[in-house]
Amino acid sequence: MHDRQTTLTDERIAQMRQILGGRMAGLRLVVSELDERVQVADVLAGIARKAASDELNGRPDPELTPLLRPYVDPASIWADERGPFA
Image (cartoon, rainbow, N blue to C red):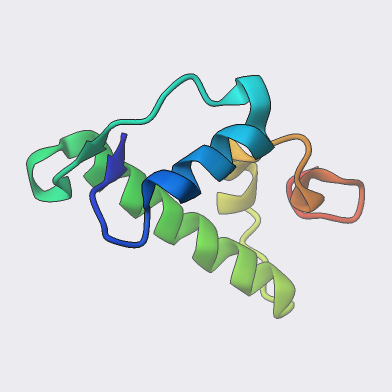
């Protein structure tokens, strides 16, 4: 599921599928105001972005960081031994 938007063209979706290989089973574009899953994902993404920004600026949140760890891709630079989600 992803919020319907003009920047997510068929070409970009094809590029994502190529880059991600088998890790992207499918994609369905929806109107976010009508789909609670997209609304929750937006909230979680905002929290993760804030946590990452705080970490980069030397203000880590010791309670929030461990809660976000399961949602970070193990291949991400945030998951290596130097990152906050290792």
